[in-house]
Amino acid sequence: MLVFGLLVWFTMTFVWPLMRQAMDEREQKIADGLAAAERGQSDLQRAKVQADGIITDAREQAREIVEQASARATDIVEGARSDGESEKRRQLDSARAEIETQIGRARDELRGEVAAIAVAAAEKVLAREIDGKAHADLLDRLADEL
Image (cartoon, rainbow, N blue to C red; front, side, top):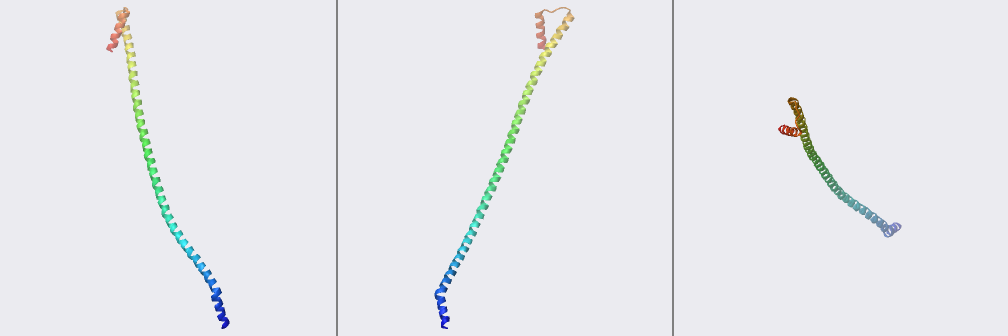
């Protein structure tokens, strides 16, 4: 019994404190690990919330950019359409003016030809020559009448 008592006393005095210290250190490491895991979990949750917010903001910005691009494209199309319409009107006005000019020239040429034909016909009918001044006066009168 004495040896057993000595073994218990020796174990409680020298071995047990070393074992208890090792167990306390291990317990502390486990507790620190669990606390770090909880902090990591909460950091992960915060990071997820922050990432969701960033993704939402990015989607909103992308939507706004698409809307702005669409509006800009519509503006460009409308601008091109109005420029095309104004160019069409300008070309039509230019063509009408050219047509009017051509009609005026054709009328003037026609008047001259009609006057020449009339003078030739009058010469043949009268069988005489009209002098230059009378001829010019007659052409002017005929041109005015036409």
